[in-house]
Length: 72
Image 1 (spheres, rainbow, N blue to C red):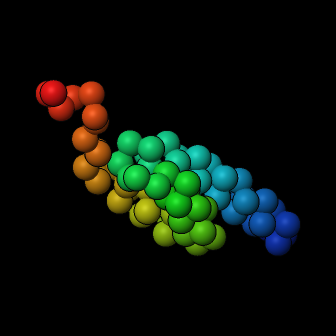
Image 2: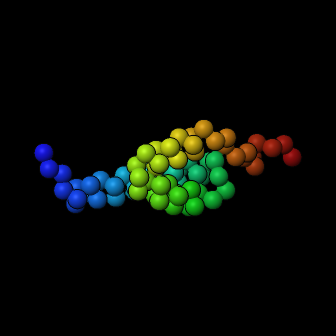
């Protein structure tokens, strides 16, 4: 079975977009710079296992404290 380079490129592109979206969603809750988290997720997704490891890292990171939860 032959797999063309075009199919591999399309897979990596779609995978990078999905990982960037998940990284942005997690980055909004867990970092102060969600755009940077999404960009790093997309860059790490060029090698798919690195993208998955990055998302797992973000999942286990503690959430940022919310301003509304602190008593005044």
